[in-house]
Amino acid sequence: MKIKQIKGKNELTQHNQPHALGDHSACIRLVSIFNHLEDSSMDRIAEKARTNHYRKGEFLFRSQEREGALYIVNRGKVRIYRLSDSGKEQLIRILNPGDFTGEWTLFNPYALHEEYAEATRDTSVCMIQQKDIQGFLEEYPAISLKLLAEMSQRLEHSERQTAQVAVEHVVTRLILFLVENIESEMNNSPIITLPMAKKDIASYLGTTPETISRKFAELEEEGLIQQLPEKKIKIHDVDDLLLYSE
Image (cartoon, rainbow, N blue to C red; front, side, top):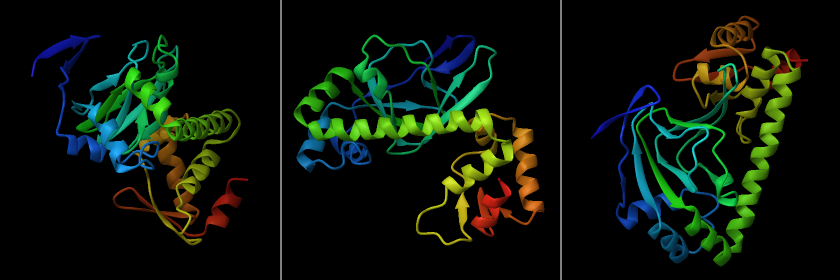
């Protein structure tokens, strides 16, 4: 693979290559905006997909770059974040297999990306170009409804995140984050798996890794949680944990 220099950082040139249709079909079937369609329809969409492979630390795209495509994570993990004028990082979300990004540029062909998308491990991404997606939106209107629902949820989540960072104490933000990761079928004393590393939780909640570590320790000392191996957290009593945040 050819090495190239981008913005002062060594980066490996990405391979954009068509894989077997079966690979792309499996990728399309991971995505909520597509997997409600008939198999034949998903196969048609898969025919337009291309795969990019990224090493850990490489970027799918950077802020101020323009590329009209939908990026679907097939394998691996991607972090989406912004940088403030002072260079402080704000994590927006983590993409896992089946998650996607780039939907904003589908409706704004001349818009620039405002975020960075970085692979946090070796990652494979299915890409579908803007013109192809727009054709499918016309052919399958149900995709548009699913896409609008996903964008609405992201907007609501972003607004809630902004409000919490602006007005809530760090420990309250952390508690709400933990509670948001409780699955609906869990009881009042659940064991949850953190969806990201603690340093990413700190960025997501608008604080520092040192502060977030102290707050985890504080909650553990209060007997509200227990930190377990493999990013697992035992919440002893959800009600008590929520009361502590008030």
